[in-house]
Length: 207
Image 1: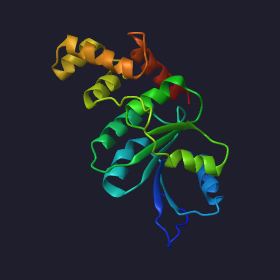
Image 2: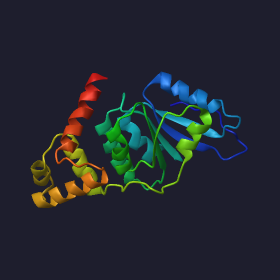
Image 3: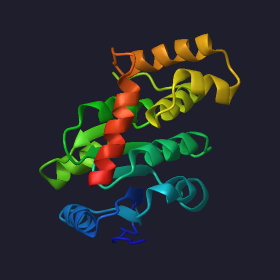
Image 4: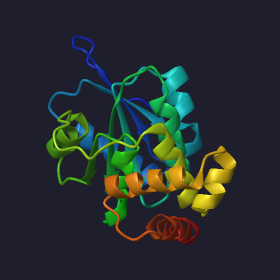
């Protein structure tokens, strides 16, 4: 974990940053240090699978910043961590920037509770505005806990029948919930979640 300077005379906004890459972490630090007034504390988390534990048990952060989404981050693990974070009592603003344009990721992240998704901005002012933004108007519907479970299972390659058997629910119930997930994620093809899961895993193997 690393910290940057804190203005002792003002309230310090604490940002928990998921960033596995040293070079990108240095870039974020430089961007914030370029601001004339800096009353932020950055706390770095290297490992995606430790994110929920760090947030729920060890740090009282104002903002959770997810970086390099789509590159260098296991997306399936990240979704599981976001599901765990949703069960914590701590309320936190979650922002994520995409390392490249991956059309499916924005709706998926919002569905799992991310408040703001943006591409890497040009300057520090834009960067801070993006991670501080708390305007929830126009947000896509967030998935329910059961819908998150179904989404993760289908992305991992399970069928509707598999999910029904594992959860002890009727296949028709799971199928209806799958349709609700697809509507919220703006998907049209019935097999799109499974295909998406295969694409996600293929990207992570190649990176």
